[in-house]
Image (tube, rainbow, N blue to C red; front, top):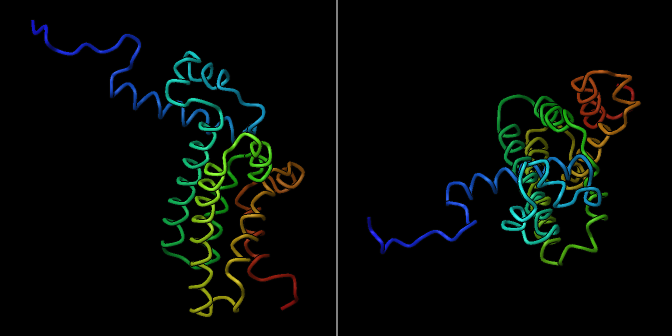
Length: 204
């Protein structure tokens, strides 16, 4: 047996185990933060849900603000990539926006700005800037789609920055149970919402 081979430190996970465990923590914590917000989720809660020790979570994420930041960057990256795929795909602007809305509204999340307010005292300026930059990239995808639709004369000229923010703000209606229960199907709410954004309330 080769005695010169360096031994792995006790308690330190193997490289493959390390990567899998970190991803498990990230996915689990992301779901918890999105459902319950910043204040109600602790590292202990994350560890228990993952079936890990609290020390295992601390091994990868030294504090709650670090974990929260990584989780939001992960969630925003997934949302960005899905939105890019849909908005660059086939269909009219209305059809593609409807698909984005359906994807987003299929789950009930805590309001993004509410989460950021809860976490504001714990986040560093760098962490806040990282999250806001990732959020901005998502809006830029929508802005580009609105701009292209204007150039093709699918919609009238308007500020694409404002339109992207209006669209995302409208998606928060999914958290209003009375609205969702009345219409029952997410697809129906998404269709009405996008039609309202693009066509307005004026009689035709």
